[in-house]
Image 1 (cartoon, rainbow, N blue to C red):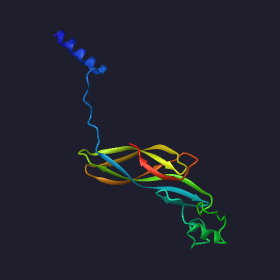
Image 2 (image 1 turned 90 degrees about the vertical axis):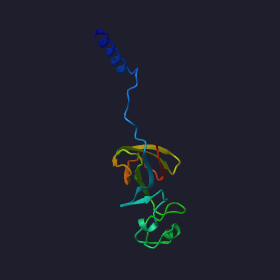
Image 3 (image 1 turned 120 degrees about the vertical axis):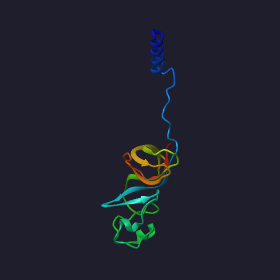
Image 4 (image 1 turned 90 degrees about the horizontal axis):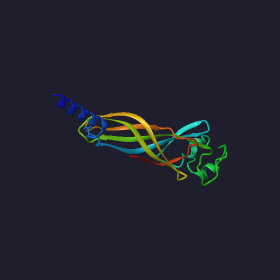
Length: 170
């Protein structure tokens, strides 16, 4: 009896010391996440709007309501009532300030277990060829076989630049 007790204590000590592998929970590997698009906040004076998928800038009329028909830089320069007429070939809107990023995602559960996505990490590419990796906490519950459209907000560090591309960081 003493031998059995000593033997079981030794086995328990080895388990707690990590000498024998302890069975772990199966990993959830069948969650697939795709970036389907992104939107960045843009501020032009007192106006705010969004730029989709890394577009260079909005049409001139967005920043200059006095010239509602101008869509190109040349047309904007010809508009005499538009204040702060920009110079070509830069963005038609003068003094843009870039804001935070919203990323549209498609989340699919291809496995056989209901699951939860708790964090999304992206690599964000800016117009000046710099990149950052940014993660955000999310709580997307996804059932077996379900495909969901989700949106995540990423707060970018200052000074914020124009985002040209976004890619999922595994």
